Amino acid sequence: MNPGARSEYAPSQRLRRYAAFFEGLSPDALARLDEVLTEDAHFRDPFNDVHGLPAIRRIFEHMYQATEAPTFRVLGMSETGDVGHLHWEMRFSLRRGAAREWRIEGMSRVRFSDDGRVSEHVDFWDPVESLLARLPVVGALFRLPVRLLRTPQPRM
Image (cartoon, rainbow, N blue to C red; front, side):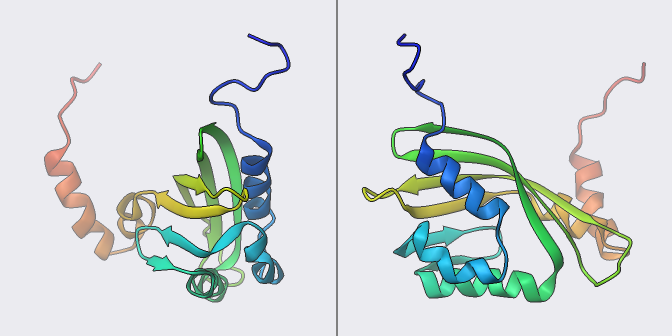
């Protein structure tokens, strides 16, 4: 292998740029989404499935309204052809000054267009484990089927 060559899975500059954009995401940065996403980009997560920059921008505007100080940190990335994968965590609070910080860990699959911007961004993360199971009362309803379906392990 050529010592200077990028391996098949090593992230390209375009994937690094996309990851850096989300690590630095802020309400002001939403005006620059067109720098990293195509006009007709597709975005999907456990709660949304939309096409186009205006709809994607609304998702992130809502995130800033519904949460306090959300941040993204990319934990790892890889790329093959026109598809990149980001392993990330999101941290936020639900109210200003709340002691409880919420953490979501997930993966994103992104597809790049010919111009280097992302044309598809699909998030994979578990909303039950990350959010719903942690809520008082309601969480117990979500945890019950998990306990019933979990394979018992011998005690050591």
